[in-house]
Length: 614
Ligand code: F6R
Image (cartoon, rainbow, N blue to C red):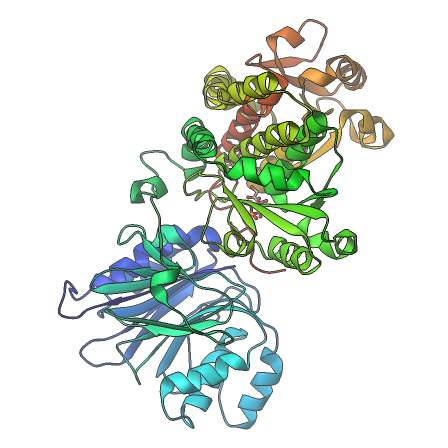
């Protein structure tokens, strides 16, 4: 994973001594969600023209303080926040990495698969290595090839063509101290354009404070940027016309800041009504979803590919498509695409769901399906992402930037796009008439209000509840029908930020094994949806009989015959709106449990927001 950033500021224009260091450090803060086990920067000192590297193990705030990142002089520089793949998180393995002489420094996101054979070759040529990383090999390879090429860029290009694997690379060098060289394959990299400075970063929010003009790089792109120029060529397609690739992003910098909340996660939970409003308004403002539904309805097979929380949104989408249209949908976990790809042909529609648009497993599932003739419909929050660019049709989520590692507002906005797609498919296929269609769309327009009411109704109890079981080792989440994917999402949220073992099952399945774990006061949550009320009442009774601590999340109309030990009442809504009433309390529960356990919900251990490795 990892986050990288680079900035080149014109020396004669607004480049105070420590300006670049400040931009890089700030940018790294917003990229920390991508990895945070070590961090580093490299700047070209404008007076000595030498490279200054500062780096260390730990989170940005601590390392930056220890090494005084903000007092590093220079107008051209790069930075990196790491999620270790090759080599433990140590001071030496932290990026940037340098060549033998310290004339080249680079940061890398991705994995160089052939680094061992390259290292062997470079060791034979006399290079000395300091770290255990795959990345350092690239610095020495460039050193080797630049020394025998007509200029640095030629050597850089030759080096890139020898790399196997995935990479977003940013390189500074004393040979051309005015430039940052870059290359991209599989890992995300975006150029930010401004008047007297140019940027590059793994993600847009890192540059939002300075520009809203971006050029997303494609695989095979390579080039350089200086304060006033950007040059990009594609190794296969030749020189890139920047004007044609440029995109304008209407996100505001404050959207990517905490705004007074203690954590991004709680801010993003509260932002859900606004995010859903923007999703809904976006969806009805143009014909994209109608056209997508028309095309999907003509295909024989409908598949959905996604990972993690997005997979759960895919299961909810499947539920509504099947319920409304009567057509079967197969939702699969992206990393399992090899077991499914042979089913894809040119009569298949594949809906790929990815908040970041950069999840490598989902990219691979998408590319494999496309190669087999499938038509790709992407639901993504980042239009300029790899998935956004490579899909045949893109439906934007419009959730705004999500910084907390745990997906919250992006889950419900994905669910809203999926539900709107289901309703439009129902109409295209002729399963619902105009009146029913209008009623359903009108129902979905209330999703922002339902989230708001659900938060207000459950926030109080969700703040207190964690005290009761924050010391438990395990929790079950059970549901039926639509409640099953919501229970899956609940268990994922719980385990990823509280580290409590949490599992979800269809409630009926609990009798076939999981119930063996139940003992006195074992917490069992029931996510009670409209369609499952009667059967779930018996599952609650079965757990009560074994002394479990049963908790039902249900609307008032459902309460009468349920006999859980605790009931959490959510707004009473139509089936289409149940995700918006049932999910917020679960998000709040995970958040407050993490806080009670003294954990940082924004940066769960071992996780990163965008998973660009297989
Ligand atoms: C969980 C979470 C992850 C992501 C998954 C897919 O809270 O955020 O499970 O949902 O890594 O990411 P995207 O949607 O970017 O493809």
